[in-house]
Image 1 (cartoon, rainbow, N blue to C red):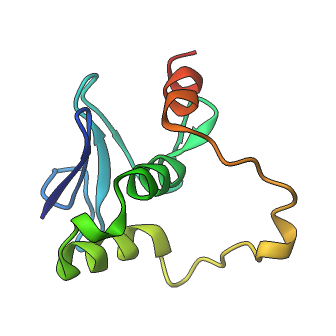
Image 2: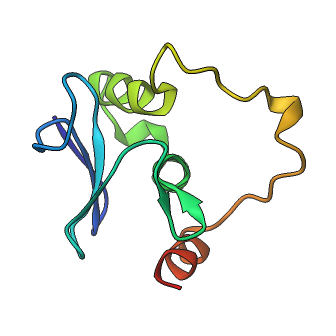
Length: 104
């Protein structure tokens, strides 16, 4: 499955770097591949996906696409997510800020 999140980002499990059943985020502009936990500049691939989904709105996605995205966002079931109360006071980052941080 491929889900285009922005003109230069695609979430896919069809790339050779994607593990069985696990999607990767592909930067089509630079042909870079990122896993959920990878950092892209000062932000994670997960943050980029989350921000793109928020900006586009979940109503534009089909139910199977939402499920696919949620599997990427949840990550491995073996890994332990950080509880919300330990996240501190995290600032929400805009797409433009993400692009600035990513490019440096």
